[in-house]
Length: 474
Image 1 (tube, rainbow, N blue to C red):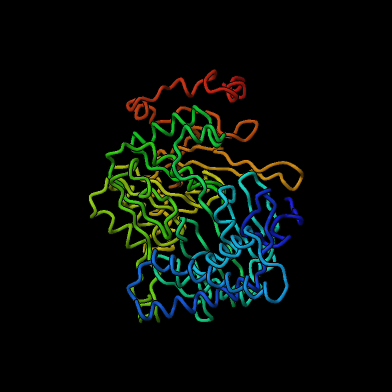
Image 2 (image 1 turned 90 degrees about the vertical axis):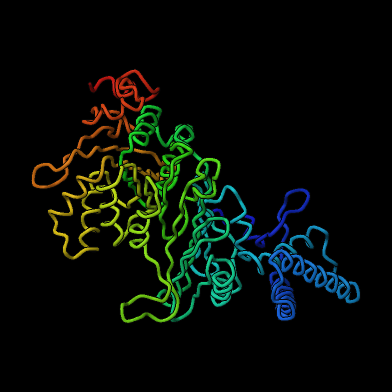
């Protein structure tokens, strides 16, 4: 892991750059002062005109910011200090505007298309994860931990789909940002405020794109494409940040345009409904946390759970149900949907291998339904699931290498086997470099051939670099 302590951020947390592309230092005390003046002026105007549109609010804010900068220039001209340059004025304007309507000092990182993750352990221990695998420590994102908490409270109140809170009574915050990123923050239960923002850099992706990204090889792309067409129920597994959601998007983009499906997520991450050309008939469901005190049933007013959404999706005339991530009680109704529906449903699941997925799902089913016995849970999982696709992350940055993420296993489920556990076939297994290579024909090969799959993709001599690895094993 690299830690570049001479980055732009530690030289001042630049919000803009000068014409020669060097970072422009920002006086954050001045930004805070201008933000207070701008916010006060904006609040006063909203009292007089409560129906002021968001666009009008932003235009007014820019006017107030410019008025504040003009006043600063006049003060400095009379007092003697150098007046801000044009680049410095732009940097100050952007920083104040981001403090009011965006993410404050975090905004430049969220705007950077190369940033994947933002992580803060307190206001001054901040790390940026880039798409090329680098983790870089950057400048403080607030003046103090207390200031960071105030910023997070401002973000929660203004930028979510529904107003959220971050207080002593509600110390956990998870929300979707306007650009689709997911923000999670914790206070009170930790020594210092913790913040993580996970960004979704690549949204419009298909299986051919994943081949180019070396996440999968062509034989596997052809097999997965046929699996979607054959309406196989697919579970995508892997660790945190492995790329499960990205693969799920790639699978979804193999669907016919006329397909009607429901996506169900705790927070929107698949974002298929934002691709109307590819998915004009998607019903996007997002869970809702609820507000206020908990009732006698333990639920907050207005709460809508993933379990309820899975059950409700069946009445929305959809042919497939795609659940962004299975993590709790929703596992059992999803398994029931997979068992009873037309097929073609998908989900992601945290699991350390394709085979471990069945243990995880069975445990989640039993946790969500006290009446579900282990035998019933395993039998239902075996009946519902057709394929488990596992993504492996290999991170060798600590020894000077790189981080790689790729599909390493595809397991076919063939019903109940010995001991009541699912009977499986290893269709793709890890090759010499860990990447998935064909190993056995699926038992249901005829289903894939019926939708156009060429079985020769599972034979040696097809697909490029993996052919040599397979050739000596058959």
